[in-house]
Image (tube, rainbow, N blue to C red; front, side, top):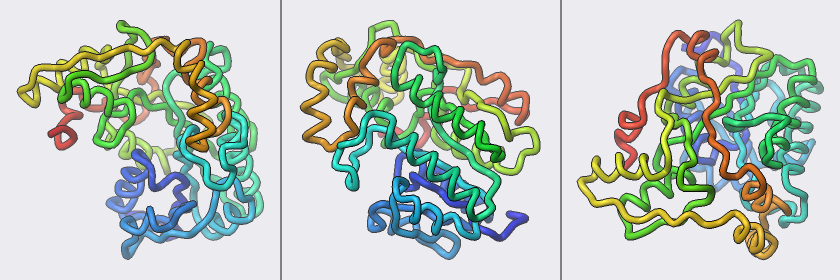
Length: 306
């Protein structure tokens, strides 16, 4: 049971990982407040302990109002998600960076100290990928704010509804699936429920503030290896995974971004230099802090494939 009855604000609560975070917080007895651009999408989250307030992370007033009276803020947003308020006009990573600046400012105004920001494994200021470099800069802005900040960097998140895992399940159940990168690219896997549980365990952990932690199991696999495991679980013959060259994705990116109202440069950034790098990281520090490991890939499939 939570020792503090003030709510935890979750920004990005309607997303794949965000929904699991809300559920994990609620199961631990936490009150949860969700900031949602489209409240109707969060209607199913509402319960006796979960409330939804309308607002956009890019609106400083909305973030400040949502943060009033909370004990912590969790930010779990997807950089390339469709932007209703900006119409896709913002540059790649500007959306997330501006949102974090708004969170920092709001916390300062209302006196909130604790912030947890979910990014991705591989984030580094020296990474070849502009996406990973951009997230590294945003992480650093949070760490430099003076708040009690923690960053979580999950590997490939395994669960129904995940983008990367969706490619794996399609390849295991259909004739073929499209993927970006290179055939031998390796990913450290992590169950979506482990991401949520690890975050909740770190919320009040005295050793968490001021650190970034990679999250993941011992399993480091290629897309084809993951597909084979899923296909065996479903007693199917795996289909083909067609690796799309990053150069082709970059060529089509401006059109896709404009039509999809996706922030300018987002797709090109993700498909740019370094898009085929291994995403492995080092979950050792988090394991040492929490005293446990995240579940293996095969166990992550329980309840997630059918």
